[in-house]
Image (cartoon, rainbow, N blue to C red):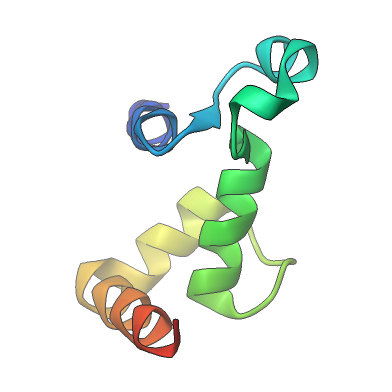
Length: 77
């Protein structure tokens, strides 16, 4: 749960709503909701919108592999 709180804090700092109700009430105020943000992370790391649980995926990949995937993703942008 601690890691997801960090994800939520980061998503919030980038303009995503971490509260579904708040997003539904005012969607124009946000880039998307936390589910959207997590989908972006999932695709960035796996190139697919379907994958195992994100926490398990992060543990399996390890820090170095995750950093390489993020860097590769950012190069394409």
